[in-house]
Length: 186
Image 1 (cartoon, one colour):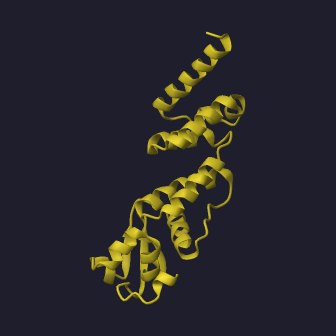
Image 2: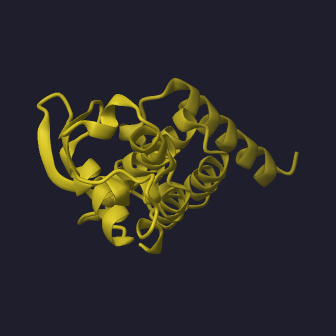
Image 3: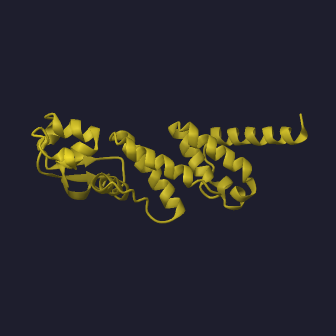
């Protein structure tokens, strides 16, 4: 917050975000706070782009709950991933994407940590597919190892039925065949 004091280049005023296809509103967010917490908003609102003086900024391709959690993080420095294991993992994935897009590295790291901690029987396969899609090698390796080590629990939780990506399925099959070969000693 100290960065908001004494910098005449910071914009003043408030902005309303219009979020998603329905343009749901997040109102009265401080422009100068956005600038000091996000490099992206610092550039957008701080160097004379049209949004500097805008009262509203449209944010497509996200949902209100996730973007609200993102704005709340910028305002409070506290991460809220919601309730329930599945919801927390989904929210962490979306927030990590928002953190990357809006250049908030600390939030990105917190989300990556939350994702790694949320790997369990029900979440391993969806997280594996998300890691494959986003190119997150660390999470991908962790999920693959978890599925290999806890195959019965993952299967019992319905994880196998959740599998949608053929490339991930082939990778898991390859892992299973490798384990069979190790057990046979060949």
